[in-house]
Length: 254
Image (cartoon, rainbow, N blue to C red):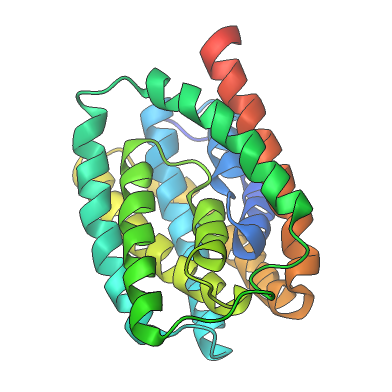
């Protein structure tokens, strides 16, 4: 595919914003992936190139979280392994199960998730932390489940990880954000490798957009540390709303 200046002018600013949102609350792919398609990039190349740019941004956000001491490495390592296994399972399920069925399930789950986020006074602040072993086991189960979702369908993966790690594993919001970044980076690298081997990545566009994604993720990661749940809650609700509208469009209006 021949690239023009217009492709860069459309993609780069919105990828910057997507990177900021993704670092704070997850769900940046709900913004960046449609951006590539809107710019006229074919769907498979859009998905592949988005993996390159978002992966670059996620790598910087992960480093920022690590620099700030927000990644519990032992827990994150176990979760990364489970996410890889789950992603492989999800990819195989996608070959035999209609994604329409899963989308219908999500139409019910998303409003319920939104209600939970709005009604929740704080993220895990009122929950007693579990012992390390219990926290790791629950986190591994979450990584396996959401990893499967990511391999099967994908949008909103970071948002769901952040919610489940705080709600079910009783993790502190900031550490949950760090573990989420490790899982996301792992799945991004794996997916990108597959797309590169199959020649689907528009490398020049992906690299330039990746620089904008890096800037967005860096600023978002710093903003996350300063704002906490005050910043995360409204962005998560917005991401869930966008995802819900997108699902309705894909199921009934497309």
